[in-house]
Amino acid sequence: MPRRVAVIGGGSSGLACIKCCLDEGLEPVCFESSDDIGGLWRFKENPEPDRASIYHSVIINTSKEMMCFSDFPIPAHFPNYMHNTLIMDYFRMYAENFKLRKHIRFNTKVLRVNQRADFSRSGQWDVETENQEGKKNKHIFDAVLVCIGHHCHPNLPLQDFPGLDTFQGKYFHSRDYKTPEQWRNKKVVVVGIGNSGGDIAVELSRFTKELYLSTRRGAWILNRVGDKGVPRDLSINRMTWLLKDLLPFRMVCNLGESQLNRRFNHTLYSLKPNHRLFSQHPTVNDELPNRILSGTVQVKPNIRRFEGSMVEFDDGSVVEDVDLVVFATGYRFSFPFLAPHVITVSDNKASLYKYVFPPELKRHTLAIIGLVQPLGAIMPISEMQARWATRVFKGCIKLPPAADMLDDIKYKEETMADRYVSSQRHTIQVDYMHYMDEIATPVGVRPKILQLLLTDPRLGLSLIFGPITPYQYRLRGPGKWTGARQAILTQWDRVALPMQTRPCDQAKAKCSLKWLLVVLSTIGVSVYVNRSNLGALLQNPDILLDRVKMRLATIGH
Image (cartoon, rainbow, N blue to C red):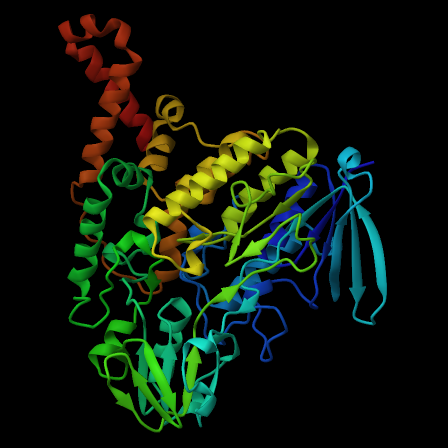
């Protein structure tokens, strides 16, 4: 009998888990408390309890090539940055293509997940559920994948704002914001300058009489549009990560901050924080500088107090007759259906090996999927975690001893504390490439780039100097996808297609630094391959030149 796996949650992480279970010959049963897939990305006018909720206009800030599942590219005609409705369309395509919906039980809430009496031997779990009619059922599963994300409970720190109980206007958390029209000609304060706070401030400012964006720390603002108009996240490659790791942290921050200040001076716009660029999760917002420049958004420090309809800020400035305060103050996560001895959450921290496995369980048959905060999309990371977890469930991968896992957890906590400012959003922060490679290594799917430089130079160079798209992790090992190479080599075509809506004269190609790097890399590879005959090659360089030409010809095809 195939092992039965409970998947809790039918969002993007849950869908990836169902598919990974099927890929490994496991039997998934997904419990989704709502009536549809999509999780966070499914817009609902009325938010559901203990679930995140998006506003109508949300557009993802990660480009489609970086956010797709690794063996299912997003259609080429889809825009690079997608509206939430298109993200839902993609999820439905994914679910339909891999026949995932038949494994989902909708309108079914998980009440409890407990270890069975013989857990130390069987590793099994008792799962109690409740359907929309209130009927409760008990199930036995061999393993459990928890996919409820980290946008669970709105963080509304009302105690930090004296006098809020006297406020005569309206206030709510950003999850309750949907559309801006009703706030036309009103005075609004948005608290928090994360991605939601920035987006909501910009959207409201087109309608409001006055809009104030309150921030304790300030923020570094990134834009979606990168150099030459391509998505910014596609300009980050393995070479840039290598340089970032080799250079001192201070120098890397100086370079990044200088680049951001060339777009607009963060000090001039009252946005400059005291912390360094890579010490906080940055805010992605293309329009905020324009709204500040036009005076429709005014940046303010933290709120000192409320009194009636008046708001006073820490700098002593006062705004009278405020109609609305939106608290874009993040979320807290928890796992109410799990016993505290399985996972304890304190101050938005959970002790998990590589953010996935509780380290001290006697049998590693429970995994938390998607409990990370990357600079980028969660979808490929959740998928990689699911590929790892299902291989662990099958016994193909063995986790290290509990003591080693606890040491790894401690090391990550200390590293994070050294790098990031103290904040609940930084308790689960990861760097996309490093984390993907870290998980891909035990799974056996981390790309062998040096080997590819020798056997497939065109592909190898694409992996080094091109974007770190998820397809890289389907080139080899378990779950290898035959379409991965082609997906990598055609990714820029899919980036360009949705923007090619009007014929334009093609500019003449110029010699670029990229080709200089290609030539130098090819020479290096040729020298390395022929290192045993290096003396003869130096005496007759024409032989080396011929071999370089052969490799360049290979790259060109």
